[in-house]
Amino acid sequence: MPTVLLSSAPILDVDATLLIHIGVFLLLFFVLRALVFRPAIALFDERERAIDGAREEARQLEREAEGKLDAFEGEMDRVRGEAGAERERLRAEGTRLERSLTEKVRTETEQMVREAEAKMATEAEKLRKDIAASSPVLARQIAEKLLGREVGR
Image 1 (tube, rainbow, N blue to C red):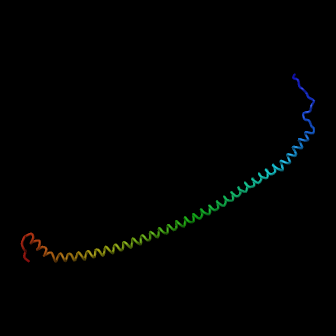
Image 2: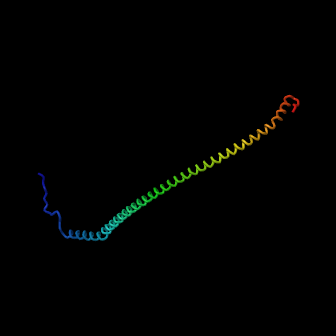
Image 3: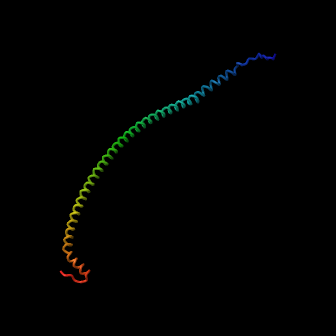
């Protein structure tokens, strides 16, 4: 069997040094609490409040931005609608103007063609009369050239 040494000395000596250690501990505790712990905790609390405030402000700004975005998109839809209506109105007006101009040009062209045909008919008739009047003279001149002598009248 192993030998166990039993000591009669107590494990913890309670004497004046224990009281000095407790006193130094308490003194350091209160001094550190006043100078370090409370300011640090106050700093942490202030930082937490600032972070929470910044988060709430960010949420508020996000809500405002969403509202402004919705308003912007609504305004853009309205402007797109107005632009589409204006585009359709201009397209219809352009089509109407195109038809009007085409009809006007067609009418003017038909009038010009009728005038040209009348002028051509008048000139053709005049040329026919001139040719009819000058054909006996031309025929005599051609015959004289072909025969090489003068032909009687």
